[in-house]
Amino acid sequence: MATAYPSSLHQSGAQALADDPVSERNRRTIQGMVDGFAKQDIDAIMALIADEAVYCDILGDGPRGDEYHGKAAIRDAFTRQFAMAGPHTYVGANIMVEVDTAFASWTMVLGDAGDPAAPRFEGIDEFVLDAGGQVVLKKAWLKGQPRLRRTLMRRNPAAALRNWRYVLRTLGR
Image (cartoon, rainbow, N blue to C red):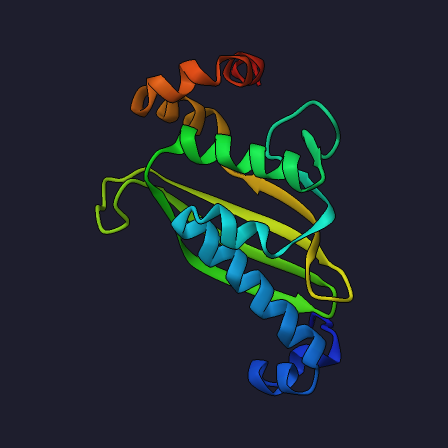
């Protein structure tokens, strides 16, 4: 049985984006997010986040994980995550955009991306963007969360101690 796709997906990717300047602008925003996360450039990331944005973490008890509302709370969450992860990057990003909704799948690599033994974790983000092309909602999913927590605690115990409340709250999940 054939799968039905929106007609815009039948066009070449470049032609579809050229025909939709909003989707192209939003694709650039999401590419900027991916690049910012790959470099842990908090200022570049926050420049793309709307003041009233919501971030739904990979962890948390709610149906959307822990939710962080507003730029200050989101900045704090990302800064804590970068400190916990230590040196890392994101590779192999695949970005899909349809007007104000976007998805980015990626592989997070702890340590050097060129090291085949470096731990890797696959994930995906869902984004909603406002009329100005800023992110108003970011929902994150990650495969291998228990392995990631164990790996981070072994690799960066000082950061785990600095963030002990967060670590203790997430250990049982």
